[in-house]
Length: 309
Image: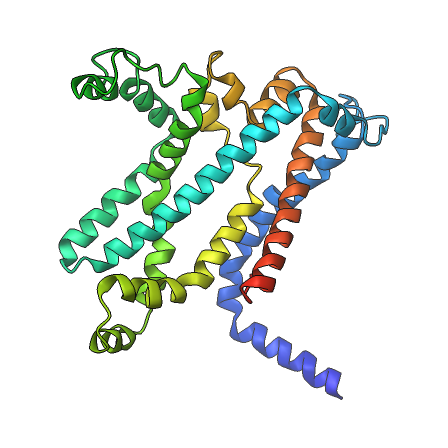
Protein backbone atom coordinates (compact mmCIF):
# COMPACT_ATOMS: atom_id res chain seq x y z
CA UNK A 1 0.00 0.00 0.00
CA UNK A 2 2.82 2.38 0.91
CA UNK A 3 4.61 1.70 -2.38
CA UNK A 4 1.40 2.44 -4.21
CA UNK A 5 0.95 5.76 -2.43
CA UNK A 6 4.66 6.51 -3.08
CA UNK A 7 4.32 5.97 -6.83
CA UNK A 8 1.15 8.06 -6.85
CA UNK A 9 3.00 10.84 -5.06
CA UNK A 10 5.88 10.77 -7.56
CA UNK A 11 3.45 10.91 -10.49
CA UNK A 12 1.72 13.90 -8.89
CA UNK A 13 5.07 15.67 -8.45
CA UNK A 14 6.02 14.97 -12.08
CA UNK A 15 2.70 16.34 -13.32
CA UNK A 16 3.08 19.42 -11.12
CA UNK A 17 6.64 20.05 -12.38
CA UNK A 18 6.11 18.97 -16.00
CA UNK A 19 6.94 22.41 -17.45
CA UNK A 20 10.23 22.61 -15.53
CA UNK A 21 11.09 19.03 -16.49
CA UNK A 22 10.46 19.80 -20.17
CA UNK A 23 12.70 22.87 -19.92
CA UNK A 24 15.39 20.70 -18.32
CA UNK A 25 15.18 18.02 -21.02
CA UNK A 26 17.34 19.75 -23.72
CA UNK A 27 20.17 20.25 -21.24
CA UNK A 28 20.02 16.62 -20.12
CA UNK A 29 20.18 15.50 -23.76
CA UNK A 30 23.10 17.87 -24.39
CA UNK A 31 25.03 16.49 -21.40
CA UNK A 32 24.24 12.90 -22.42
CA UNK A 33 25.42 13.38 -26.01
CA UNK A 34 28.42 15.66 -25.55
CA UNK A 35 29.63 14.76 -22.03
CA UNK A 36 28.79 11.13 -21.30
CA UNK A 37 28.80 9.51 -24.76
CA UNK A 38 32.42 10.58 -25.54
CA UNK A 39 33.53 8.88 -22.30
CA UNK A 40 33.31 5.60 -24.21
CA UNK A 41 36.30 6.84 -26.21
CA UNK A 42 38.43 6.60 -23.05
CA UNK A 43 38.75 2.89 -23.87
CA UNK A 44 41.15 3.95 -26.61
CA UNK A 45 43.73 4.60 -23.87
CA UNK A 46 43.92 0.82 -23.32
CA UNK A 47 43.81 -0.26 -26.98
CA UNK A 48 45.86 0.19 -30.14
CA UNK A 49 44.30 2.71 -32.48
CA UNK A 50 42.76 1.18 -35.58
CA UNK A 51 40.85 2.85 -38.40
CA UNK A 52 38.88 -0.37 -38.91
CA UNK A 53 37.16 -0.33 -35.52
CA UNK A 54 35.68 2.82 -33.96
CA UNK A 55 37.52 2.72 -30.65
CA UNK A 56 40.69 0.75 -31.32
CA UNK A 57 41.96 -2.74 -31.98
CA UNK A 58 44.17 -4.92 -29.81
CA UNK A 59 44.10 -4.39 -26.03
CA UNK A 60 47.46 -3.16 -24.66
CA UNK A 61 46.63 -2.55 -20.99
CA UNK A 62 48.57 0.31 -19.39
CA UNK A 63 51.23 0.45 -22.13
CA UNK A 64 50.52 4.09 -23.11
CA UNK A 65 50.32 5.22 -19.48
CA UNK A 66 53.77 3.69 -18.83
CA UNK A 67 55.11 5.36 -21.98
CA UNK A 68 53.84 8.72 -20.77
CA UNK A 69 55.20 8.36 -17.22
CA UNK A 70 58.63 7.25 -18.50
CA UNK A 71 58.82 10.01 -21.11
CA UNK A 72 61.54 12.63 -20.33
CA UNK A 73 58.97 15.37 -21.00
CA UNK A 74 56.62 14.08 -18.28
CA UNK A 75 58.13 15.98 -15.34
CA UNK A 76 58.48 19.22 -17.33
CA UNK A 77 54.92 19.12 -18.67
CA UNK A 78 53.41 18.25 -15.26
CA UNK A 79 55.46 20.98 -13.54
CA UNK A 80 54.39 23.63 -16.04
CA UNK A 81 50.74 22.56 -15.90
CA UNK A 82 50.54 22.55 -12.10
CA UNK A 83 52.43 25.85 -11.67
CA UNK A 84 50.41 27.73 -14.30
CA UNK A 85 47.08 26.33 -13.05
CA UNK A 86 47.91 26.98 -9.38
CA UNK A 87 49.05 30.55 -10.01
CA UNK A 88 45.95 31.25 -12.11
CA UNK A 89 43.61 29.64 -9.56
CA UNK A 90 45.06 31.49 -6.56
CA UNK A 91 45.44 34.77 -8.42
CA UNK A 92 41.97 34.64 -9.97
CA UNK A 93 40.30 33.70 -6.67
CA UNK A 94 42.01 36.46 -4.67
CA UNK A 95 41.43 39.06 -7.38
CA UNK A 96 37.74 38.13 -7.73
CA UNK A 97 37.15 38.30 -3.94
CA UNK A 98 38.92 41.66 -3.59
CA UNK A 99 37.12 43.06 -6.64
CA UNK A 100 33.73 41.85 -5.34
CA UNK A 101 34.32 43.42 -1.92
CA UNK A 102 35.41 46.72 -3.48
CA UNK A 103 32.52 46.86 -5.95
CA UNK A 104 30.01 46.21 -3.14
CA UNK A 105 31.40 49.20 -1.25
CA UNK A 106 30.63 51.58 -4.13
CA UNK A 107 27.54 53.63 -3.32
CA UNK A 108 27.01 55.26 -6.73
CA UNK A 109 24.72 52.76 -8.53
CA UNK A 110 25.45 54.07 -12.05
CA UNK A 111 29.22 53.97 -11.59
CA UNK A 112 28.94 50.55 -9.94
CA UNK A 113 27.02 49.05 -12.89
CA UNK A 114 29.43 50.65 -15.37
CA UNK A 115 32.49 49.16 -13.66
CA UNK A 116 30.82 45.75 -13.39
CA UNK A 117 29.88 45.74 -17.08
CA UNK A 118 33.36 46.79 -18.18
CA UNK A 119 34.93 44.11 -15.96
CA UNK A 120 32.89 41.36 -17.67
CA UNK A 121 33.98 42.27 -21.21
CA UNK A 122 37.47 40.63 -21.19
CA UNK A 123 35.86 37.28 -20.43
CA UNK A 124 34.17 37.32 -23.85
CA UNK A 125 37.31 38.24 -25.79
CA UNK A 126 38.88 35.32 -27.65
CA UNK A 127 42.34 34.19 -26.59
CA UNK A 128 43.44 34.85 -30.18
CA UNK A 129 42.70 38.54 -29.67
CA UNK A 130 44.17 38.58 -26.13
CA UNK A 131 47.37 36.93 -27.38
CA UNK A 132 47.61 39.48 -30.21
CA UNK A 133 47.17 42.33 -27.71
CA UNK A 134 49.81 40.80 -25.42
CA UNK A 135 52.28 40.48 -28.30
CA UNK A 136 51.83 44.18 -29.06
CA UNK A 137 51.85 45.45 -25.47
CA UNK A 138 54.76 43.26 -24.28
CA UNK A 139 56.78 43.38 -27.50
CA UNK A 140 60.56 43.79 -27.25
CA UNK A 141 60.28 46.95 -29.37
CA UNK A 142 61.33 50.12 -27.56
CA UNK A 143 58.08 51.77 -28.61
CA UNK A 144 55.92 48.96 -27.17
CA UNK A 145 53.84 50.26 -24.21
CA UNK A 146 55.43 48.25 -21.39
CA UNK A 147 59.07 48.54 -22.49
CA UNK A 148 58.58 52.21 -23.39
CA UNK A 149 57.23 52.91 -19.89
CA UNK A 150 59.99 50.98 -18.12
CA UNK A 151 62.67 52.73 -20.20
CA UNK A 152 61.18 56.16 -19.57
CA UNK A 153 61.19 55.48 -15.81
CA UNK A 154 64.85 54.27 -16.09
CA UNK A 155 63.92 50.96 -14.41
CA UNK A 156 65.60 49.04 -17.23
CA UNK A 157 68.47 49.87 -19.58
CA UNK A 158 67.48 47.68 -22.50
CA UNK A 159 64.04 46.40 -23.65
CA UNK A 160 62.87 43.19 -21.99
CA UNK A 161 61.81 40.29 -24.19
CA UNK A 162 58.74 39.27 -22.14
CA UNK A 163 57.48 36.77 -24.72
CA UNK A 164 60.89 35.36 -25.64
CA UNK A 165 62.36 34.70 -22.19
CA UNK A 166 61.05 31.59 -20.44
CA UNK A 167 61.29 33.17 -16.96
CA UNK A 168 58.61 35.73 -17.87
CA UNK A 169 56.04 33.27 -19.22
CA UNK A 170 54.40 32.14 -15.96
CA UNK A 171 53.77 35.66 -14.56
CA UNK A 172 52.66 36.85 -18.00
CA UNK A 173 50.06 34.13 -18.60
CA UNK A 174 48.89 34.34 -14.97
CA UNK A 175 48.35 38.07 -15.28
CA UNK A 176 46.41 37.62 -18.52
CA UNK A 177 44.23 34.89 -16.96
CA UNK A 178 43.44 37.09 -13.95
CA UNK A 179 42.69 40.14 -16.10
CA UNK A 180 40.45 38.14 -18.45
CA UNK A 181 38.35 36.45 -15.74
CA UNK A 182 38.34 38.70 -12.68
CA UNK A 183 35.03 40.37 -13.51
CA UNK A 184 33.30 37.14 -14.51
CA UNK A 185 34.55 35.21 -11.47
CA UNK A 186 33.42 37.98 -9.13
CA UNK A 187 29.72 37.57 -10.03
CA UNK A 188 29.07 34.79 -7.52
CA UNK A 189 31.05 36.57 -4.79
CA UNK A 190 29.08 39.78 -5.38
CA UNK A 191 25.83 37.80 -5.10
CA UNK A 192 27.06 36.20 -1.86
CA UNK A 193 28.09 39.57 -0.35
CA UNK A 194 24.81 41.19 -1.40
CA UNK A 195 22.84 38.50 0.47
CA UNK A 196 24.54 39.30 3.80
CA UNK A 197 22.13 40.76 6.37
CA UNK A 198 22.79 44.52 6.60
CA UNK A 199 21.93 44.49 10.30
CA UNK A 200 25.23 42.73 10.96
CA UNK A 201 27.14 45.72 9.54
CA UNK A 202 24.93 48.18 11.48
CA UNK A 203 25.66 46.32 14.71
CA UNK A 204 29.38 46.31 13.90
CA UNK A 205 29.34 50.07 13.28
CA UNK A 206 27.61 50.63 16.65
CA UNK A 207 30.33 48.52 18.27
CA UNK A 208 32.97 50.77 16.69
CA UNK A 209 34.23 48.43 13.96
CA UNK A 210 35.85 50.20 11.02
CA UNK A 211 35.42 49.10 7.40
CA UNK A 212 38.44 46.78 7.45
CA UNK A 213 37.19 44.94 10.55
CA UNK A 214 33.71 44.67 9.01
CA UNK A 215 35.23 42.99 5.96
CA UNK A 216 37.48 40.62 7.93
CA UNK A 217 34.91 39.72 10.61
CA UNK A 218 31.63 39.72 8.65
CA UNK A 219 32.09 39.70 4.87
CA UNK A 220 34.85 37.12 4.45
CA UNK A 221 33.57 34.62 7.08
CA UNK A 222 30.07 34.82 5.58
CA UNK A 223 31.20 34.14 2.00
CA UNK A 224 33.73 31.49 3.08
CA UNK A 225 31.46 28.56 2.02
CA UNK A 226 31.23 30.10 -1.46
CA UNK A 227 35.01 30.56 -1.59
CA UNK A 228 35.59 26.94 -0.56
CA UNK A 229 33.02 25.63 -3.04
CA UNK A 230 34.56 27.46 -6.01
CA UNK A 231 38.14 26.77 -4.90
CA UNK A 232 37.40 23.04 -4.57
CA UNK A 233 36.00 22.93 -8.08
CA UNK A 234 39.05 24.89 -9.26
CA UNK A 235 41.41 22.34 -7.70
CA UNK A 236 39.73 19.64 -9.76
CA UNK A 237 40.87 21.47 -12.91
CA UNK A 238 44.47 21.86 -11.73
CA UNK A 239 45.73 19.78 -14.67
CA UNK A 240 43.74 21.89 -17.14
CA UNK A 241 46.06 24.83 -17.60
CA UNK A 242 44.24 25.78 -20.76
CA UNK A 243 45.09 25.18 -24.41
CA UNK A 244 44.45 28.47 -26.16
CA UNK A 245 46.55 30.84 -24.09
CA UNK A 246 49.57 28.52 -24.03
CA UNK A 247 49.28 27.69 -27.72
CA UNK A 248 49.01 31.29 -28.93
CA UNK A 249 51.73 32.67 -26.63
CA UNK A 250 54.07 29.71 -27.04
CA UNK A 251 57.28 29.93 -29.08
CA UNK A 252 60.55 27.96 -29.23
CA UNK A 253 62.21 30.34 -26.74
CA UNK A 254 59.68 29.91 -23.92
CA UNK A 255 58.58 26.33 -24.60
CA UNK A 256 60.43 25.02 -21.52
CA UNK A 257 57.87 26.91 -19.38
CA UNK A 258 54.86 26.99 -21.71
CA UNK A 259 54.46 23.33 -22.65
CA UNK A 260 51.46 22.00 -20.68
CA UNK A 261 49.40 18.82 -20.89
CA UNK A 262 46.87 20.27 -23.32
CA UNK A 263 49.48 21.45 -25.84
CA UNK A 264 51.41 18.20 -25.32
CA UNK A 265 48.33 16.11 -26.19
CA UNK A 266 47.65 18.28 -29.24
CA UNK A 267 51.20 17.87 -30.58
CA UNK A 268 51.90 14.24 -29.79
CA UNK A 269 48.40 12.79 -29.56
CA UNK A 270 46.65 14.45 -32.49
CA UNK A 271 49.19 16.02 -34.85
CA UNK A 272 51.33 12.85 -34.84
CA UNK A 273 48.22 10.59 -34.95
CA UNK A 274 49.15 8.90 -31.62
CA UNK A 275 45.49 8.83 -30.62
CA UNK A 276 45.81 6.08 -27.99
CA UNK A 277 48.71 7.93 -26.36
CA UNK A 278 46.69 11.17 -26.31
CA UNK A 279 43.67 9.35 -24.86
CA UNK A 280 45.86 7.91 -22.08
CA UNK A 281 47.15 11.38 -21.15
CA UNK A 282 43.61 12.77 -21.20
CA UNK A 283 42.31 9.97 -18.99
CA UNK A 284 45.20 10.53 -16.59
CA UNK A 285 44.14 14.19 -16.30
CA UNK A 286 40.53 13.25 -15.54
CA UNK A 287 41.43 10.67 -12.86
CA UNK A 288 43.82 13.07 -11.13
CA UNK A 289 41.17 15.81 -11.26
CA UNK A 290 38.55 13.63 -9.55
CA UNK A 291 41.08 12.52 -6.92
CA UNK A 292 42.04 16.13 -6.18
CA UNK A 293 38.39 17.18 -5.74
CA UNK A 294 37.81 14.33 -3.27
CA UNK A 295 41.01 15.12 -1.34
CA UNK A 296 40.30 18.87 -1.24
CA UNK A 297 36.74 18.25 -0.09
CA UNK A 298 38.01 15.85 2.62
CA UNK A 299 40.55 18.46 3.84
CA UNK A 300 37.88 21.19 3.91
CA UNK A 301 35.54 18.97 5.90
CA UNK A 302 38.27 17.95 8.34
CA UNK A 303 39.82 21.37 9.02
CA UNK A 304 37.09 23.88 8.11
CA UNK A 305 34.02 21.75 8.88
CA UNK A 306 32.47 22.42 5.47
CA UNK A 307 32.58 20.90 1.99
CA UNK A 308 30.70 20.40 -1.27
CA UNK A 309 29.68 16.76 -0.61
